[in-house]
Length: 137
Image (cartoon, rainbow, N blue to C red; front, side, top):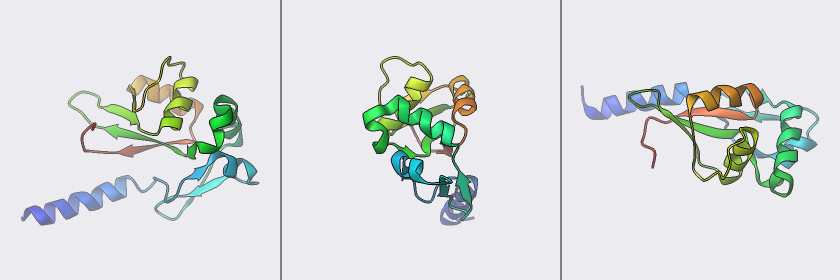
């Protein structure tokens, strides 16, 4: 097999694994105005966002609320042990740090599997996890 074939195959597999990723993200203020807040996923389906989560994020972020793009994308980077989770978006990192009571958040924000389990319990519809087999940089 040629390397080109393998790369195309792996690229297609990664696309399938990440089909739940949004086609286009929307800002929090726009979503709050919608009767039924939703986003369109790459597979064409609609993902409904929980209005309670949206209001919670608005209250947490106050003046930065309209700058938050949803869902918050959390990259999972596999590793030899359990891998790491990374939030690269500054406003998303600020929101997650507040929800998780992480003092002095930085961007990118690195999270453990334990953080993710708790976070997904609290913000299930407003966060999404993207598989990124690349590196942390």
